[in-house]
Image (cartoon, rainbow, N blue to C red):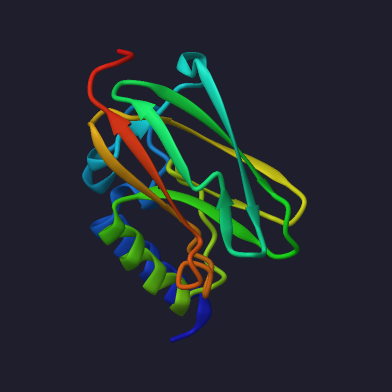
Amino acid sequence: MNAPLSRLALLAFLACVHPAWASKGEPGHTHGPADAIGVAGKASEAKRTVKVDMNDAMRFVPANFEVKQGETVRFLITNSGRVKHEFVLGTEKDLKEHYELMKKFPEMEHDEPNMVTVDPGRTGEVIWRFTKAGKVDVGCLQPGHYDAGMKAVISVGKGGAR
């Protein structure tokens, strides 16, 4: 299969299996796996900015976050390393599945509300509204990074901002 055709097949697969990863959607409106972790937020509703550093030690700093159910947070993500990194919100299961795809298609680019790819020395952002209490996982899905421990956890407390 040639490269453009395999990319098209991959995008079609993502559109069917992972709707939140395959389309931008409108802020605050997603379906499928993203519903388990929240929805895309609107910048005007973000009352708090959380700064996150990604580095070549394959770590997020900080690696643990606390938010309130209903809260919209702006994550300002800086890549202080020398290689490309990602900040991807998801369930552990979904992150692992997507990571396996990234190993097969390492050049895959993302443009979804629950993730950002950041080149070395650059900064990106994710604005997310946490609609359900529980745990949201974060991972860098660049090949080798997730396995090296580039993961974080967001604890979503019950009740809070609406």
